[in-house]
Amino acid sequence: MSLKVTMLGTGVGIPQPGRSQAAVLAESEQPLLLDCGAGTILRLDQVGASLEALDTVILTHLHLDHVSDLLALANARFLADLPGLQLFGPEGTKEYVRAAKSLYPNLAKMDVAVRELHPMDSISLKGFDIFAEEARHSVTALAYRLEADDRVVVYSGDTEPSPRVAALAKGADLLVHECSFPEPFDVTNHSTPKKLGSMIKNHGIKRVVLTHIYPQASGCEDLMAEQVIELSEVPTIVGWDMMTLTL
Ligand SMILES: [Zn+2]
Ligand SMILES: [Zn+2]
Image (cartoon, rainbow, N blue to C red; front, side, top):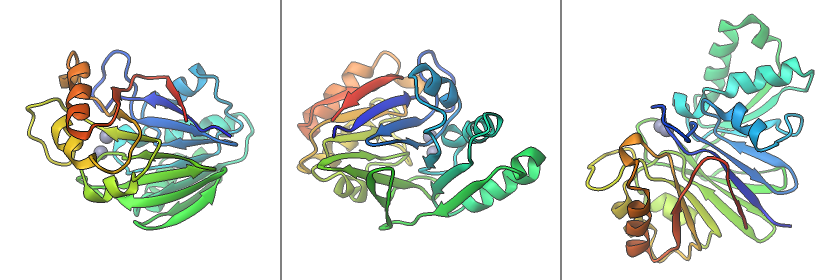
């Protein structure tokens, strides 16, 4: 069975044309949503995803550009008389959901089952074996490796180029990695093309899609991909919303 990856949202917290906030849809036997930033429920509808089948979300971290539509998705399922959400995320996810439920009385009635994950944890769900690893960000954040049959996709979430995330992506058919800013931005907590390209070299990764693109990168997309290719020797493109890759 093939593994389909749809880039639902390739943007960040700052609005820009064509880029919704962070979200990736992975589909093997069933769909699995990774992150759920603002705009995700609209994108899900635009790509024809079934609300009924979308009952599981995995969060990389709790920054707003990765979770803004989570409550909207839970509410949409509630309004459609569908069972509640299964939610996985890093430490703090339970408290986040508890606090959200206290703000919205109707949310309190919704069934949201939360399980917190830690680096090195592994779980099996929706036809995927999933492995969590620590990302290098300003808050607790995880990257995930998803394996289905012999296909592998890795999603970095937000991170500086990290040896742990690179090791997690070893041999992956696809690495969806954030590349927030073009050169010569000097940033922490996020990735830029040259440091990322150097970090992922020699890991047997077959292709890379860059995501989490800031407005400062507008117009530099091709150059960013070329810089990653030059240093990593891995075929690389910059993602756009609703781009689908079949592995
Ligand atoms: Zn973040
Ligand atoms: Zn982000």
